[in-house]
Image (cartoon, rainbow, N blue to C red; front, side, top):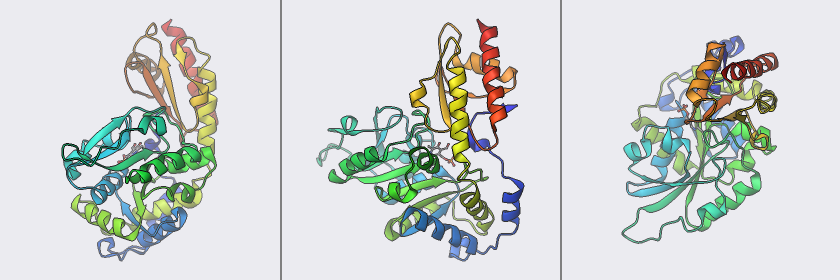
Length: 344
Ligand SMILES: Cc1ncc(COP(=O)(O)O)c(C=O)c1O
């Protein structure tokens, strides 16, 4: 089975498991796990921020950031497909008591024309617009990576409107790979950045939130409140350290495989893949209605040994990752061609 459902399906390698086995540990809740401390310090340096808090998941680091930034009655602004407001169980409302202003962008990305007039006036009738949330790379929005100039424009708009800027950087290293900027160049534009180790970097779990001392202190309190303050979590922090040191370079291969796959299947009648939108490890395929629904087509692929998620009635997503090599990529494209030939 070739599994392109998500980069979250990556499994820890033997070397990563060995690093976990060898990890020096302590009680992280009192700040005494040396491996967690090392990982937090490493991320501060990489992202050019004062402080960092190791979290269980991307959901936890995103939601801890919102809790740290907002009060009930505040509002966050986010692109319509944004993960933290659509796929995190309603957490902004449930955990922090904020409402969400969804803004339609392009490929999951926002620009000035989308944001104009979206900051609410400071008047008693309105929720108080507090945080501008961006996602880079975008996931459901389109697998796109923001150009640095666009991030600069948009966060400048946020700051000039007194908004705090948060980045959901679940796949920030994919964005850096695709656009050739550094984590610190991106992070300097944001008050907080959430980073995931459990996606393309191949760790079993773990995320990091970086920001200034004061905001991370509040986020640390949120982590505790959400049940995410752990004890000997150095075991999983060791996997993240291992991945940061050994797995970043290979993200470029995932992007190459994604592009190669997209190129091949874009020739298939009834499937549309805009090649100029394939920028990272995520490929979206539009299925024509004459072929059937995305669910029906995804089931056909699965019957031939290729798993992908149908995301929307006519939309299928393929995600490339370190457990998929060039040969499996060729094979995946062949399965798509075969399945569609059989469907027409
Ligand atoms: C863009 C984005 N943000 C946040 C998350 C949440 O991460 P987790 O599943 O670790 O909670 C995901 C998960 O897929 C994601 O794609």
